[in-house]
Length: 497
Ligand SMILES: Cc1ncc(COP(=O)(O)O)c(C=O)c1O
Image 1 (cartoon, rainbow, N blue to C red):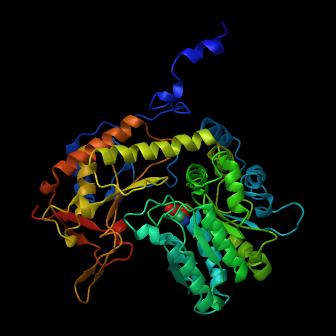
Image 2 (cartoon, rainbow, N blue to C red):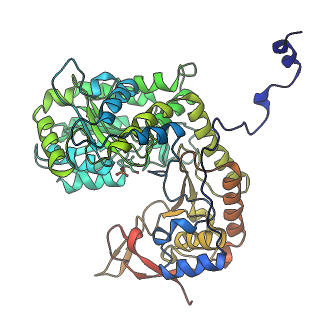
């Protein structure tokens, strides 16, 4: 009997959960052993601000950000050694050009059939945003840039360059009963109304994939096509903020009709076939620790309407970042990025990545914890209003800050308050606090860094704090209440301590 026939008599490997990871560890770093008391002492010293807590002594998971925190593959480490630090036209530049052609299309990076440079490297996403919005902002007064959800630095860069950033979140995002898989979509009817009423002030339309500000929810290809359709009717260039392009493609494959049989790579190609350009931070789905860029379709509407911006962008790059062939990056980082782009679109990588977040979310939900659903592609959000709803804590007690301080000191996991404190504001004239609509603590999961047992421990830790939630005290803000971006800088103290 053939072995291939014999194995049919045994249960299929796919029935065993969890599946083995599609990779093994290449090198590891041991954590330094710290007691909860030692962590508490350190956190007290930095005013309970988890951003200022030394990462080196985190014994659990560091969920502060998925940005730039990726564990690189052995192929990336090998590529790093081949980094060429030449000032002009380093080896990595050509490798990256090849990888961008392959991933997004030849139209986005100095297509050899044209002489026009249309790809601009930057050291990270926000530097690229500042560059493009500086030139768009100079086109006219009082311009508006609509999006399905601008990320906070995108929003800030648009407004710092004299324009207004508008978020047209989908109605499903606000509807707690909606089962939509694509809550990150743009509200197309509001976009059309805006184009009809203020079209002459709209220089470009943006869609962020996945929609980080909109609960990190994905966007459907159907929605991308509809927005693209409007952009053609009204002759407006259509851009993507593409940081998590591959994670978004995965959700399309899973949940959108007609895409099950397509590869992540094919879906990515289809998404980008509609874009006149994109901005990107490679610190997410570039699988690299640094990098960003602006890529403009060489035969697209953006270049047709604003051809002078290309040379402006290159001048900006030279003044601010360095020669356009490295754009603020070291040659070795460019090499690691070129390899990262090849890994990110592998189906087995993405299956693992998304199922890890989904399993983490399911474990939280099964433990009775108020986690936002559906779970997205890079983070989980804990609803702190629901977490504390049967306790005496009030909005101005900033329970999310107390929670993150206790989670880090008692259990060694670092999460980030993105709620009443981070997005609220204090008016020093009236002494009044304004609170945002939502109040979350975010658990962003770094790529290829943690294993199931790390995440299980995090769930048990959150559950323990939830069970003892009536013992969690309020905090007072002892520094920085009135500052902008205050969550990065403020200091706190537990009340009556
Ligand atoms: C959707 C989105 N756009 C832009 C950025 C900015 O990128 P960077 O952190 O590289 O400046 C981020 C970073 O988290 C993001 O999530």
